[in-house]
Figure 1 (cartoon, rainbow, N blue to C red):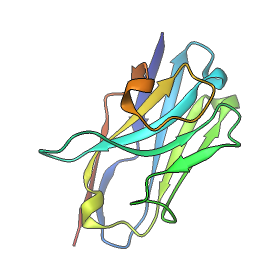
Figure 2: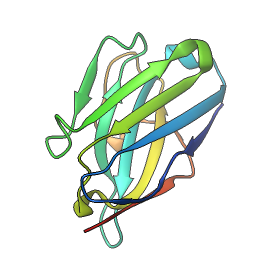
Figure 3: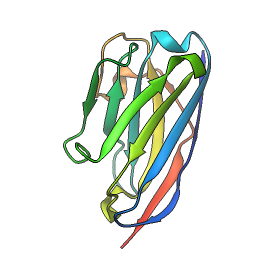
Length: 124
């Protein structure tokens, strides 16, 4: 089992920045591919970014590429999502997820463990 707890969400003006954190406990964190997803009201959960177990492989949704950066600190069992140049359309609940796969993954079905989510609201 892996337990995931997100933090760092909040209200920010358009153009601003936020840094989300996801603290993991349970199984060996460093062996998991990690991902960030988001879900806006009335919409399906969508992929945002993923990072492999070494941190050397990352992949982003086109909508966030160049603005968001995913990273991880295996010594601290934590994965981060740095979000810059935020837009109102980035408003959503952001979820951290862990996959038993060693390779990066964008599909929600590839992730076995999920956090409870943290709200990000970007005002115009």
